[in-house]
Image (cartoon, rainbow, N blue to C red; front, side, top):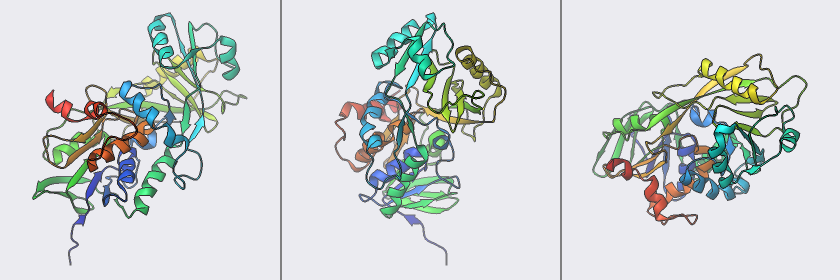
Length: 371
C-alpha cells in the first residue's frame, strides 16, 4: 500500500540554523515537519560558520537582533545544552591610516582604543606599527553544534518530524494547503517556510513564486598550525578594520579567512586558494608568524538580500509561503531572537523581545516585492 503524504501545520524547508531554530520556537504551538535536502542538518553554511557572537557586528537590524539574542546565549533554557553556548574570546581590530573612518565607526559601536602593550599582552606576536588598535571585550565563541542540536532537540521532543535526504522537487498550493513533492515523499501543510539558505530562491521558484533576488556569497576559510612553541588558545579574535582577513583560535590552531564575499550559485562550496593566500599574507603583515602550510580549507555560502537585511515574513504574492532566509552570515548570532520573531509572525502574535513593528517591516519580504 502506498504511503500517504506527511502532514503538518507547518513545513520548514531547511534544517540549518534558521530552519531548526524556527521549528523549535513553533514546537508545542503547531505541528512542524522539517525537510532537509542533505543527509544531515547543518551540512552547508551552519556547519561551516566561524562561530562567534558579536553584538557590534553587522548592519543595524542585525545588531538589534544579536543584542536581543544575548539573554538566550548566556542563559539558555534548562536542558537545552550540556555545556555553555558561549565562551569569552574578545577581539582586537587593527588598521592603517586609511582606516580612520572605520576606526571611528567601530568605537561608536563599542570598541575602545588599546595601547600596543595591552594588545601584545593578549596577542604576543603582534607586530608594532598599526595606526589603530581597538579592542572589544564583548565577543564570544559560540558552540554552533550545541546550538543547532539544542534547537533540533526542542523540535523533536515536542513531537516534530525531521525528514532528511528530502530534496524539494515541486510545490503547489490548492484549497488552502501546500503540497510538496520531495525525494523523501510527499508533504502537506497550510504553511511552508523557506529556510533553505543559499537555495531559498530555488525553493521559491519550485513552488511557483518569483525569486526575491537573494545572492549567495562564498567565504573561504582555512586552518593553519599555531606558531611553533606558542599557545594560541587564549588569543582574541584578530580582524583587520579593512576586512582583509580575520584569524581565530580553534582547537589549538588558527582559523584564517580573507573575508571574501564572492557571488556564487548555490553549491557545495569550496575555498579559493588564491584568496586564502592573500588573507594569510595580510595576517602575516600584522602577526610575526610565518604560515608554512594549510592543514585544511573549506568554503561556505552566506546569502544576502539586495539591502543586506534578513528576509523574514509571509510573501504577499503567495498565501501561506513564509520566508526565513537572507541572514547574510549573521544567522548563528541572531538565531535566538530572529527565530522568536519569525515564530510570532507565523502564528500571528505580537512582536517579542521589545522589538517593534518597524523591525518586522524592515525584514519583511514585501519590501523586496515592491522594488
